[in-house]
Image 1 (cartoon, chains in turn red, cyan):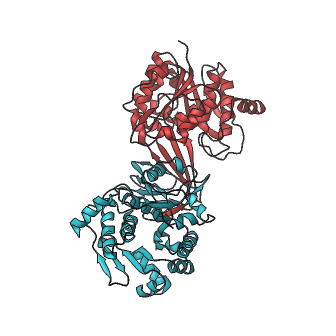
Image 2 (image 1 turned 90 degrees about the horizontal axis):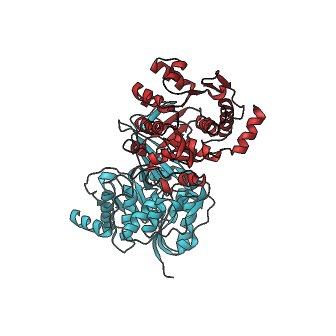
Length: 304
Length: 304
């Protein structure tokens, strides 16, 4: 069967509110908001959008609110050519929303609204979308739904990329092991990979034996490390003027998969990934400064 | 000149986010949002919308964000037949937004985003909208803009209703006196009227001599009192199952003006006003349970 899509991202699309206040008020007081910006976010959507901008043919399965198709975010996805036919629309609910408030001391308080993400629980596995893609990427989202999708992908013998991210705590060991069994590439930051090793009482080699042939550990400004059948690969981060680290990890994943699915080596994929994330952190928002393939390729060759 | 409109409301249109969290997190912690609802709000828009539902031909001047005309709120205004031709659209800004967070102890923290309301400062007085209406209502908004509008209305010899509301602190005594000079009806809750009397060092009679022939003091569940050339009028509130008092005051003003502009007595206007607000407080949100004229009229006759 000819596949029309390179990568199907599964998990959250979200609205991000980035808010500045002079100080966090005590209970029963009010504060003025001195700056408020909204951004497109959600880990799965970040991967789908950055991937699309890099030239991947991506599709996306997220559980979103009833009015999502009227939103600018949806329009943005259409403009990027993302296949959104399998979106889970939940009437009467709102698209998941994150509010991140920062005060004049640069302290932060975050609020997360799960909202329409309740729709994952009873949603059908997007069988035709999975049949129609070369690979799936499981991002933050609903653990059981991610597992069901990984089973279908395994049946179809396609590559499964898995990044539980900040939702790691929602997976019990059984669920985590079940998804890992179907996983080809596991992504995590250094905290998350460490937490998985501790929870499952394995070392990196043992973790790879549970499923993922490739483990990609991202360490922010300290670069990334990749464990596979090859020797451990270590890639430096590109030094750049970092404005906002949010979305760096998702854009790394999109960059990595865009090259790896194109048949490039792990090392080349990781260098490209690191380059892509260097663009994202130069601007506020996860999808504000998405590079084209040519822009990323040029910077990669300058640096590495 | 034949006037096409009964009432022009001037001041804020706003989006209200009503959010529930288990507890307010400390700095650098996160909290899940267990419920989030958005409502149409802003004092001027509340008066225009409730007034329109009651059968008034209303128009509205608010400073709103660049994408306001794509919003459901705008659609709602169009469905109510409100004349929005004089809206101040501020590209690149967001419509003013209020976030009201309540925790499991029913403590609240509120955040207000002024946003597009910065557009009032340099905005032109809506001369043709003022010429085209029987009365204007100045709600929370920008004090200088409200004053400029009151001057134009005075020139046109039309009724000026004024409700500084929670923005009272933004008026210095000079600005307050300047607007009051042009005011026919002053609305305030008991705290606000008291604060005005103290600030201007006058009693109610002295306040009326500064401009407003009618002073309407609303006291929540304790009803309302109206001071004019007649004897003081006291109107009981209608006992009802109060769910959310937000918007009660604005709907009272819309109800009062809808009858008063129709030539009814102060007492009849106040009874109707009080009835209208009894509907609003039965549901969450300032514009969720707006009664039609017939519904309000029927309940009024049952109660008074």
